[in-house]
Amino acid sequence: MTAADWVARDSAVVWHGFTQMASYVDSAPIVIERGEGRELIDVDGNRYFDAISSLWVTTLGHRVPELDAAVIDQLGRIAHSTLLGNGNRATIELAEALAAVVPVDDAHILFASDGAVSVEQAAKIAFQYWVNRGEAERRHFLALGDAYHGDTMGALSLGDGGFGTKLFDPLRFPVVRTPGYAVSDWADKAVSAIECHADELVALVIEPMVQGASGMLVSEPSDLARVGEACRDSGVLLICDEVATGFGRTGKLFASEWAGPAFRPDLICLGKGITGGYLPLSATVVSGPVFDAFDGADLGPKTLYHGHSYGGNALGCAVARRHLELLDEWKVLDHVGEVGDHLASRLDDTLVGRPGVAAVRRRGLMAGVELAPPARSVRLGRRVCAEAVRNGVFLRPLGDVVVLMPPLTTTTDEIRRIVDVLAEAIDTVLLWDSR
Ligand SMILES: *Cc1c(COP(=O)(O)O)cnc(C)c1O
Image (cartoon, rainbow, N blue to C red; front, side, top):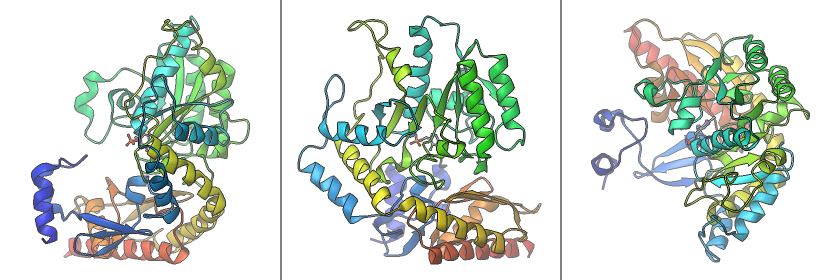
């Protein structure tokens, strides 16, 4: 059974997300069989450094013995039991551990399985919060340009489109939108919209510090802080989508912390790295005051009528709790600070100003290298990443932005290798195009 056989079997039955299946086989996909540390190993035994953390979920690496043990240990008790109206010990223990570290006052946590759903839940909770308080005239969300919040209908509505989602426009609910981090005075625009629409707004939904999927656009902590203040002063709820930025990626446990201790989101959406990349789990964290607005009679109208079959899955919660402990025990945030600085200097030395590179953006271990496609180059991002994969570094672009999001335990030597392989890949592809 060769890799080509696996790809044939794959394309016969698996429909891959964000992928045109008609060209799947020809775009040299790799089929993974195993992982080891920060490397992926394909069905032929080839190794690739996982420089995108398997689409931003892997934090400490693959097959981390401590995380494996947490799953196995929980398997010895139970894999799953429903959270609808009942509890599970593993879920309670994770919720307590999370509540102690999230920058949300008196945190209460509604679990689900995917990042998009954590956003979906946050939007519904925020909307119903105002209904329960008798202020149903607040119906609109404020969201930013270039925002990405996931692919379900509500999350898609809050997001700013792109990725071929325009055809769904008729299904999206309208939102008030002000510019994203690509515009330098985005915070001024957001603050005036908050002040101007204060009485109609349910909430501001924002990706704190880094707009990931739009190509790693970054903001200043002071701008984020100002927007948070405006929300608090106008009584508009603040929903921070930390699905990408949470659990250490930016060098803080949560990116919201960059804006200072006074920045206290009313709701935070968590996903991706929450289990270290092991199992699908997500969470909507809600402040005490928001939670209290749902207090009411049993089966009464103030109840939140929402919940998912696998929400709070015990296996996911067990590994997420161990992961949270390891982030602390291994001093992972300090490491991200150091390695992030190293990444910054390697990017500066090697890629800034290089032919074919338009811009480099970074916060912690989230970085984007925006390519400048010469007129005759098409799909430059795709081809540069394919070349890097051929050289053993697994990368995937967002359009013409190459994303570098290595696991949080990546070493400085590995950082050097990633940046060098990317630089070579850019040179190689540009050379082909110039022929
Ligand atoms: C990835 C992402 C989501 C969606 O998470 P899924 O688990 O893919 O549904 C939502 N918000 C942000 C900021 C993300 O990066």
